[in-house]
Amino acid sequence: MSRIRNYVAGIGASVIFGFSFLFTKNALDELAPHELLFLRFLTAALVMSALVLTGIIKVDYRGKDLKPLLATALLQPVLYFIVETEGLRHAESSTAGIILSAIPVAVVALAAIFLGERLRPSQVITTILSFFGVVTVVLFRATGKIGGEPIGFILLIGSMLCAAVFNIMSRWSSRSFKPAETTFFMMWFGALAFGLIFAFRVLGGGARLDILHRLSWPAASSVLYLGILSSVVAFLLVNYNLSKLKSPEAAVFANLTTLVSVVAGIALRGETLLATDILGGIMIIAGVWGTNVLGARRKREAT
Image (tube, rainbow, N blue to C red; front, side, top):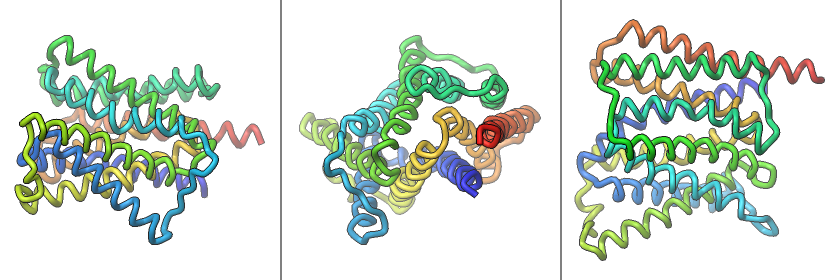
């Protein structure tokens, strides 16, 4: 039953993140990136606070060392979104897709070094299979237009490392904090950090205060989706999995996000289904399934 919950959490987060690209694009039609990030995480922080005040979730930080949470929240959402956004300004989005698909592979190495969590050789193979599934989908969808400036590559690699280390830090934090406590801290840290960036932009003349007045319903609904589902719900699911699974087993679910985003584009935007989408999708699903099924098998053998 616990394994089923992990699958539901991993697939649920991937589906939410997969659709988030559509909503982000809608919101950016009317908002600057720093405005969107501020509204997204302010919404998420207020929703988390409402859940705490109504007793739906409980948080208690008394007597606990907050340094792991500070490191976790600094990596994700703050540094990750800043570095990724800047990277996308200097590189093709397809390049970002390939670089970010290396997150589970990086987590395998980092988890072994810092957490002592090692996968079977067969699990490493299935993780790499999932990675190449993403590369197959992204590479052929880019029709060869993979490129960008060197600074873009460097920044995107930096964002990939931020996401990978976040997985390690959230896993470490789970030893002392519940998933809801980690998520609550992340949302408020993000709201405050991006709020400060927004305030400095306003003072410097690079942003306007009438941010809410300029929101149309499509943009407002996108902010709500990103703030409630893509931040609160999805990160609760991610942090839950990281508290129950080894970091590499939880991280490999992220590759499903690429598959979901492609399916969403085909279903909602009339994009063409390529043969390589099917091949890549099979590789991604097989890799995610293999990594987690083999992990469950090892746990049964150990008991």
